[in-house]
Image (cartoon, rainbow, N blue to C red; front, side):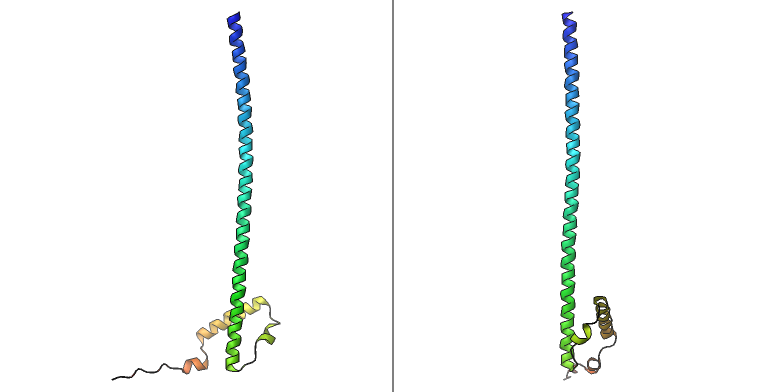
Length: 127
């Protein structure tokens, strides 16, 4: 009987040990899943932050570009002797301003001003 009791105790200990190991593995697995979810959320937040920064930077560059276009148009008006556009542009909305700028650029490309169309480069002298 002593031999049978030892085997029985060893089997019980092995079963208890295996259950403990399974429980520990299950716990580790759930911890791993939780960490993976937390990591995924952190990565998504980082991507969202970078997208916002990129969008702000792009918008800032667009605003600076539009401001520069206005400055160049004002310089051109001053050279032509026309009044500044500051009084006219105060009432306009930004989308309308963008459309006006786009149409203005297109019209300059399609129909050059009178001064530009009559200017001809000097002809080269032939020997």
